[in-house]
Image: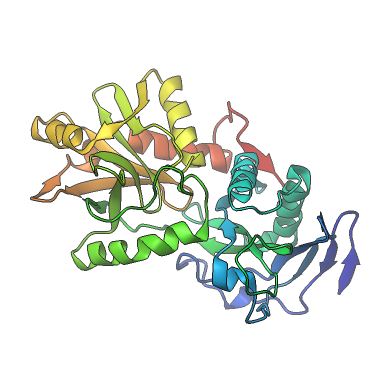
Length: 355
């Protein structure tokens, strides 16, 4: 069925696949909703977008994205509120970061209003896919890639922007064990570390695989020059609490500006914690652990939300953190974010965008 919308064309699928989904057992990122959004860029402008049934896409073997890697993405979540409404958490910040990534990768930017409307209409079409369970959410994946059919190293002149969604459960089932990486580098000064570029993640797969074979869940990336300063973890920014102080690596061109990161720091300041955004050395964290002064360590990201770190692997030893049951900040921050996203409490920072 084809519906003409004021901004987009909407073609609904004839038969929904939702009856095939077990919403009580949702693997992360493997179950996809009925529809997707697609919009093409050519001749210096974006075409009218369309919402169509979720389907495979066709690419020419010479498509430049395959050979030269112009590809960026975002991760956003939508939630079923306690009153039945659906909200998207801070999408404007993701749109802003998406366009910053596009600029760095020589890709065209998107009008923020068109982007936001695409999110709203796609989720409205697939509103039944937003889980009812308070333990699950609808993960949203906007992405863009180059489509020139040309073998030559230059920015593409054509692009495709798409959005699909998938109902998801938790990204991490429990506490996370991380290993301090002192050989491989995720990002370098002057590189693309601050952008959500696909290549950043491709380059990180091998060292992450090594760490996982050693029993860790993720890496704690360090600076590429000296490997002395902590930057972020594989799927999230990282934070530490010592007493009334929350410490996190300062944003730079090698660190992703996480939306969850900003949300957590906003809560911390609002609650009276001292927040330090600065260089954080591996040795400082080791010493805090040795002195029994590192009270909490956790990751913050869209997929994971807040992931408690139970163990940190240094080059010579694994050091355990205090049990999560005794933590005061991370559990409160995690619950507060859940309550705001679900409409259980006031939204003092106007983070929710309702469908």
